[in-house]
Length: 300
Image 1 (cartoon, rainbow, N blue to C red):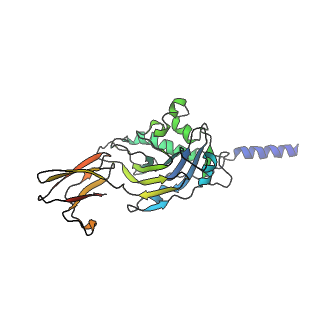
Image 2 (tube, rainbow, N blue to C red):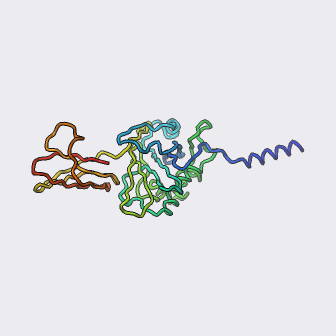
Image 3 (tube, rainbow, N blue to C red):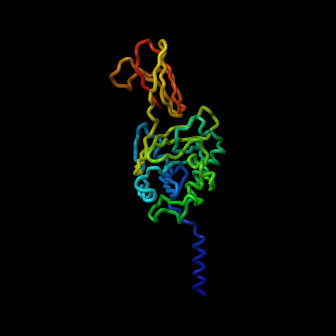
């Protein structure tokens, strides 16, 4: 009887012990998620997103801290056709709330909600993805920052963003319909990485933090800063040239010019006036003396 009583106490103690997590998630952690139809979601916590912020344009680094073999063991050594997503969020009480999302190029109104809506949707979903998973769903006992989760599991990315419904599954690529652009990229490919702030102010654009590229073997690389702009056409009427070029939402553009090629392009004069990108092909006008000129676009 005594032995049985002790066993019962041990069982009660076990049941009262909180389930251990394979990772310790904090607001601001960057989550990396792989998904493919008919397979488990593979999820990683890569630590603070701040590691990718504040770098000079062109800064390049491989994304480490995750085990690509855990993904290829589920999806195959060639990841072609699988989807990849990266996302993070500040605390909902942050003085400057921001969500970071991999995505296609959004338009200037792609995500512009009130703070309450931002808290319910973006923060609520990303925070849930980070906090929901508990054992027994870690990939292996030795993986401290990874999960392999059946998409039907209430802790899985697919379930959380779809609301667990078949109809909601159609909205998974747009984070369950909470954003107006696709947050995942089919491998291989390129993902823009956006910082999105809740605002109702039309003059506050989203910000492109950088770009991720991913290869079929899972090699993931980050390049900080804006994408290079491409001049698509130059037309001229009188002494006014119209320079058409590709833009990225939120970047600031100006035109540099010269009438003599050679030398250091960074030393070219920069015309007065700037333009804020909207994701379309836009135009900057430059008045000159009538001599032939060459142009390049500066991006900030």
